[in-house]
Image 1 (cartoon, rainbow, N blue to C red):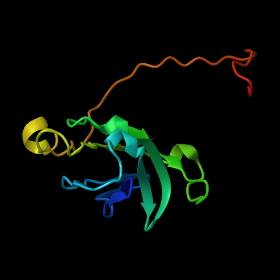
Image 2 (cartoon, one colour):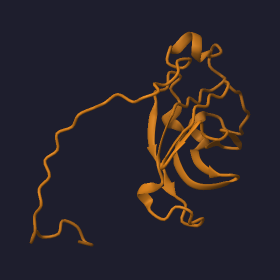
Image 3 (cartoon, rainbow, N blue to C red):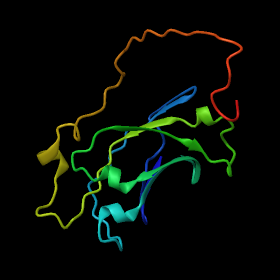
Amino acid sequence: MKIAIADYSVQTKDPLLVKNCYNRWLARFPQTTFRAPYESAAEIGRVFVYLMDGDSPICYWKGDTKDFTKPNAEIKWVEMTNDLAVGKIKDANKAGLISFKLAIVERSQAKPIIFVEEYSKAWPANPPKRLAVKRARVYIYQCRDLPSADNDS
C-alpha cells in the first residue's frame, strides 16, 4: 500500500496476513511535517492510495484533501479502482476495499497537534483482529419484462 499527498508519500511493507483473496496490513506512520507550495491543505487537491505490486501500482483510489482536514479523523473505507493501463486485475470488483485513517492539518494552527494525546484514544489503539458479526435480512425479487430504467438497458 502507498499513500501519496502532493510530493509526499509513505508505503507499507508486505501484508501481515495473506489468505486466498484477502490481505491484511497493519501500518502506522509517525506524525510527519512536510512542506508543500500550497497556502492551505485544501489546495493540495488529491490524496492517492495505491495497491502496489512491488514498485508498480496496480489499483488506486483518489480523494480530495479537504475530506481529511479534521484532526480527529475517522476510519474511512474506500473502494479501489483497477488500473486498466497495467491490466493486472481483470475484474473491477476484485480491486479491493481499503480502510485507513488520515488527517492533514495545517501547521499554521495555534498549537502543534499531538493526535495521540489530545484528540482521540483511537489513534494508539490497535484495530480489532476480527470484525464484528452482523446480520442482514435481504429480500431478493426476480422480475422479467420490465422496461429499462436507463439509456443502456
